[in-house]
Image (cartoon, rainbow, N blue to C red):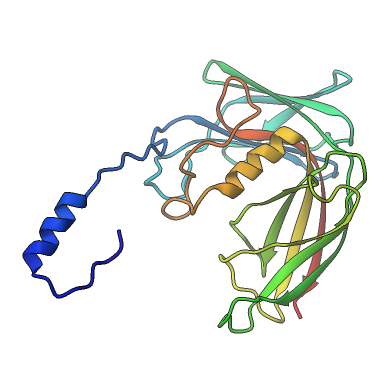
Amino acid sequence: MKTIQSYISLSIILLFATACTKVVDIKVGNDTGRLDIEANVTNTSLPQVIRLSKNVPFTDTNTYPAVTGATVSVTDQSGQVYPFVEGPTGTYTSNSLTGVAGNTYKMTVLTNGNTYNASSVMPAQVMLDTLTSQNTPTPGSDNKKEISVHYHDPIGVDNHYRFVLWVNGVQERVVFAADDQFNDGKDVSVILRQDDVDIHAGDKAVVEMQCLDQPIYLYWFTLSQQSADGPGGSVTPSDPPTNISPVSLGYFSAHTTQTKSIIVK
């Protein structure tokens, strides 16, 4: 409600405010204790990582109780099973699995008597060509910079992307997700607009480009459309669509990955 600025008496103002007050019931999913799965298989030889935790209320800060003692594995399309071994609390890793573009991977998590499954197809990799930096066009931005990514989208193929930005080792919390609905087969430039970390000349910017299948793109795109996080950047007001069955929080993503860095000019 716009502020009413006039010289009417205080009693009239209070009466007007009382008459116009409306109670809005916003449902933000404040339930707790649901399993949250953060699972990734990439095309690198680095350890593949699956993290299990429990969600917290929307009003809490970014602290998630780890889920320990689970049985976690990923199966490739040839039937080879890769067990994931728990290391740090709630973190399960495999050192023997390297994802291959075009292959389908299936995750199985057994915890607390329940079994969770998900599958994901690793798309062909689209190469990240270059990163550039430019001045932020916002007036009064005090010489702040923006980072752009540049790549060529293959023609005739549905492609979906996620970009992760770090500035001086700090990850930007804004989610960057893109598809090729309007730029199929074109040279593409995407500005990673954000307001969480200020970027200036001399900073080091690192960008990871992920090529995703459609369900995982939908997960990240939904998050990108959410408004600001809860207190401390904790949880989102509603749950994004998951590819995990039965439905839980989180995702299982088989994706390619490539990273580039620049010193901002």
